Length: 382
Length: 122
Image 1 (cartoon, each protein chain N blue to C red):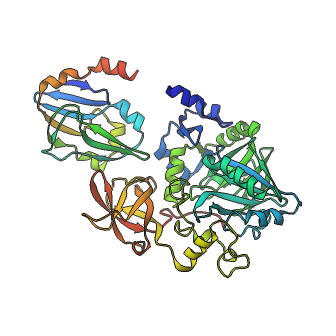
Image 2: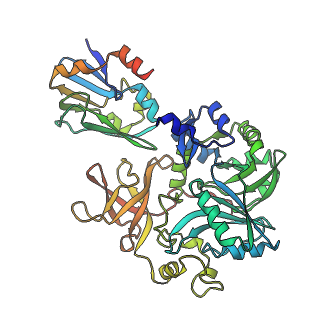
């Protein structure tokens, strides 16, 4: 089997040809041939997003409509609550919330966004998980809901301090939206779904557009000199600085939402003593973690030196000897901080801010400390 | 009179008498992208040919730089610690990594000249 065969089996987003024309360096990601960077490079793309506006093709992600057979969105919300520990019923029309599909062991099958579109729920899930997620939804919710895979839509993220002004030229409704608002809007004359959210820590939008119109919309947005196309490389460094989890790395089937420091995403109504406590896969374990604590925790990590500490690096309590106490799950260089940043799991007793730890890198123990996340202050428009 | 030779792993060596100055090629830096950190060997370290001698890190990934020949490290380029981006702007001049005392001149025979390296990366 040759490399070319591998490449040929990769799927393409509706913006594939545009990526090539923009000089994108294409790499395999979650079964898709995606741009990891453009000629500007990861560093400039990252900083441009923080200072101006970056445009990302995230069409590989899964978009799903969860339609209640009764026609009442509350029924879809109640049904989805059987699969996630979030309060879905409380999501108001036009609003969106971060959620996780959990498994019977309390682990995370995927993380996702759930929006209330008035008569149905709109879900955005990770590319690598979307087939399993759809099967999971069909297997458990088909009694009350139709699971509608929106495979004919592209998804574009516009992120950064100039995202609002850039989108407003094509979408008059954009400025009035607040963080986590989501709903159908006309953008550049096209029937889109727009949310004010993203994966960079910056203010910004995600725009779901019919696949056939994605090229037109993207070119329209890129006509603005403030807007630069951004590849997956900078998407990763941006989300890492923002302290956001990457599924399959920082969270997976072996981590509970409490271990992953995602307690904020589980509303009181679903916790012990809440109006609809439990009732999701793994509730026993997850609620026990809420009530009694978990033995390990995801934390941010900052090094003293300039050497990046990357995924897989083992963590130690001391500079010599001893068994590993944890592992780095994401790590790299944060261009906005001009310093390395990482996150990983450590025993809860070693998770307090400023706890001194060591990471093993090329046989040497580098000092680092538990640090607050996000590493870069987020600029969401609340 | 110095002679510049190249390896298939994209290191360059400038040979001046018994001393070789080693760096990575302009082609290598263009493939790596923005360099944010360089780890250099300690002066006095004895390197064997093909041994990992230095590390160059971009935002995304870490890459090893191999000793193109055997020899002892006699000097390292401290400027790279303060300004790793020199590797992107001046890969084959200011951004040399280390100098080594050549242990066995016969090892130079296995390296490429500029024309051969150009063909290698074409």
